[in-house]
Image (cartoon, rainbow, N blue to C red; front, side, top):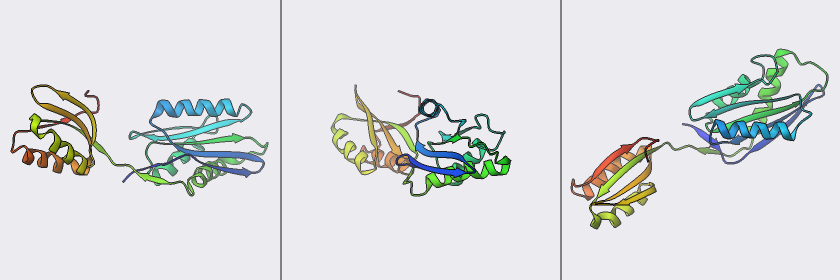
Length: 200
């Protein structure tokens, strides 16, 4: 089971005069994450490092931003993975205090900054969705819409041709049951097909 966050959460640590400002926040994907990192660089021009880790769309990325390899981004990413987070960006802005922490100290500092930011953060369960196209005769449109509501489906598009065709997103656990219910409702005279994420 995967979770995302309801809203950004922050932390701040001072370790041997270095200041670590942590943030965890929901993001839609890599593009939004990189834009957010760029904003942080602009907001903290005197910071020595802006390290980050991203879990989004099943893909992960981590950046040490000049810290010794594997001491910042990867440990931050490990925290996100351990918490089963998805669609989440973790960032840590470091103001160098003049005292080197060593590899172990850096790993602990970056891990702690992210872990502390997650304390009290509201986690939201991610429900995987499937996209379906459902076509029925016009007299069944009202009944079909009621069934879609009952199954928690989200209506994306409606096309009116020789039949009414609805494109919907359905929670994955409900998709097969909804398809069976629609076929029953239409007494076998319904066309239910899977749409890929890229289909219009």
